[in-house]
Length: 88
Image (cartoon, rainbow, N blue to C red):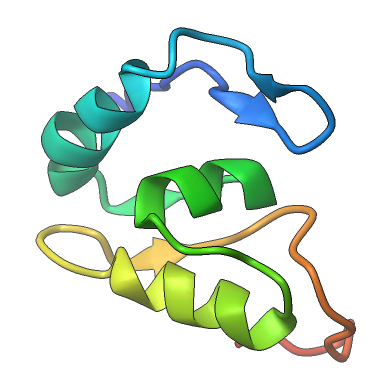
């Protein structure tokens, strides 16, 4: 099985690396086809439309993307102070 990889969208320290319109393409056309996602906190916020200011908000935003074929979301640089030995 082949896996497609999408380019990085951006990061919190500098915003979008790409045209911001890419966000809607990813969210509306690509995410429904994906089974997993590894966004950073900036990308998760953009894709979910939610503000991330705590571990709980990152979990809520991640869970909001679990629809269609999407089975898992692993967030890098998520806010908060979760137990580093545990995955939510």
